[in-house]
Length: 121
Image (cartoon, rainbow, N blue to C red):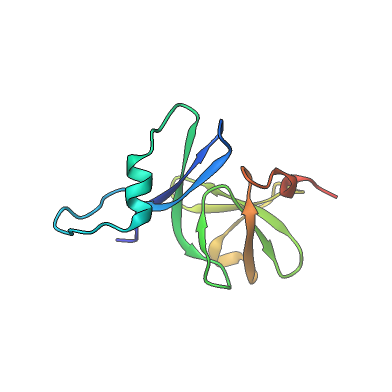
């Protein structure tokens, strides 16, 4: 089973909380600082949880839902949840690809912190 972890976007404060494990093992005595910070945060209806897809880009950066990637040819795609598969939707055309169809790419931001990445030229 892959890693189950999340980031959290606070829409009101415009803050992204670092990745944390949702299921911390009870027998581990010292959880990482990110887990403690996220676990002790007060979540509100303004919080959006963004799950790790289990995938990494060409530079080995973790990919989360709502991240924006850029392929080597300049195509930008938003990572979405297809329920049975992770979807990569072209920002300009809406064309969808699956991870095995992608060209080499890198995460360049996400739709919450970098909404300008959704603008088409």
